[in-house]
Length: 137
Image (cartoon, rainbow, N blue to C red; front, side):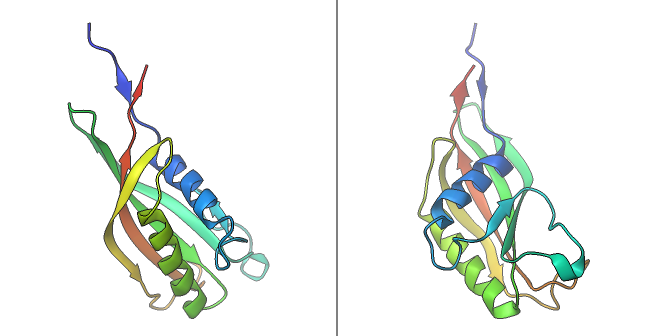
């Protein structure tokens, strides 16, 4: 009987990695990093805010698991959201953890064009491929 293998939830794995790599970074140390949408009413939102979303995960028989992950970066203005997105992507591309082997760029960071379509908040985003570490059950 083959040993079952699973991969971590990519949203949680990338969220946790981002929290670590931005913890002592001058641009990202006060950022909230979450898998949830930006909370609060328009006038009470706290910036910077980073939302991590998975666009789907994939695996093959050779213990390779990967996921496409979108990272949305909200800040007080367009320049700050773009600067933090650039920094977050750079940190992710250079990092790994017990759940993430590494990351590769896909798109972006894309500068905001009119902000978030739902809230109007300044937004920049990028997409990566996270290579996930397998775990034996």
